[in-house]
Length: 182
Image 1 (cartoon, helix red, strand yellow):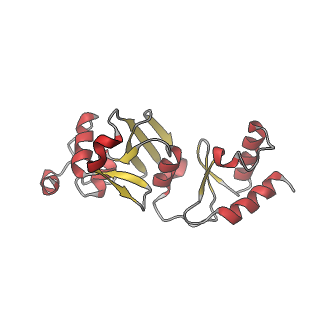
Image 2: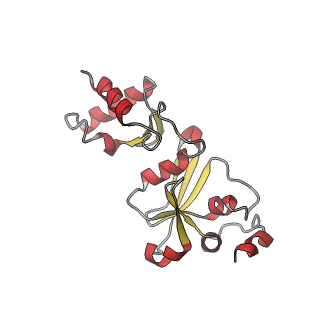
Image 3: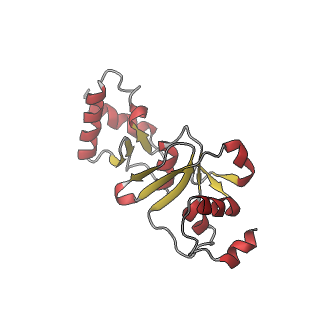
C-alpha cells in the first residue's frame, strides 16, 4: 500500500474534533521507514491532493475533521509551542475581555518563554509569539487555563502589564472597563 494511502487511513482513524492538526514530528514515528525528505514529499503530495491543508511550516490540518469555528490559530499556537510556557495576552486577551474596542481579526498575540516569532498561517491569520523572561511559577496566580483554546490566558491586569512591558500602544484601552477588573 502506498504511503499516501496509509496516511489517508491513519488520518481517517485518528482525526476528530480534538485531533485535527498534525505536525511533521507527529508523522515521523508512523512513517519511520521514510527518510525525512521522503516524508516531507509525501506531505506535500497530500496537500496537493487535498488530503491535508498546510497551516504553516511543519503543521497540517486534516480538513475532514471537525474544527470549532475560529479556533485554528489557538490550536496551532498550542501545537507549535507545546513544550513551552505560553499564554494569550496583549491585544488578544484584552479584546476578548472587552478592554480594547477593536477585535484583532486573524491575529493572535501570546507571551512565550520561547523565542519571539511571527508565524503566518496563510488564510487563517498570524500568530505573534513575544518572548518573556518571566517564569510560569511567578505568573501562576495571574493566568487561567482556557480549555476551549487549549492555552493559558492572562488576567486583565497581566495582559495590561504585558502591553506596557512590550511598549505597545495603550490608545485603544478603555480605561473605564479596565478599572472594573482592577
